[in-house]
Amino acid sequence: MVDIQKVVDNSAAVNTLKVEHQSKMAELQTWLDNAEKEIEKQTVSSKKEKLTKQYQQEFIQKQQTIQQAYAQELQRIDASISEVITKIANKKGYDLVLVKDIVLSGADDITEFVIKGLKE
Image (cartoon, rainbow, N blue to C red):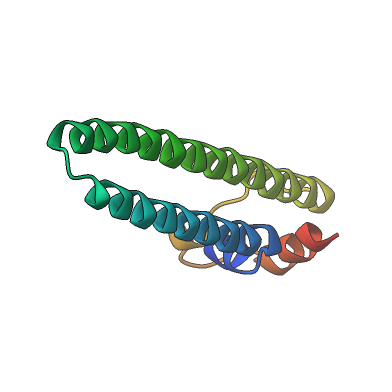
């Protein structure tokens, strides 16, 4: 069995990804704040409306780009974790590895081996 949550919590790649994602979202928020200030400066309502639509489209595009990059990297990390689990299972001669949450008792815990394998 493996404690996936513990593996994820101890993953340097996941932690780095979270920090990078938070940083990008903070940058996006700063951009949005500046866009709102720019819109407020407009005195002509038609220009204000046009600028609002433009910034809304840009915001959606930027947000989607950030989310897609995050999801892709998360998938890559997930594949890496699965690969390490498979290698360890094969090395130990296991045909099946279950998630710790569904195992009541009677299984070898390979969580620490997986955490160590991810660091290599």
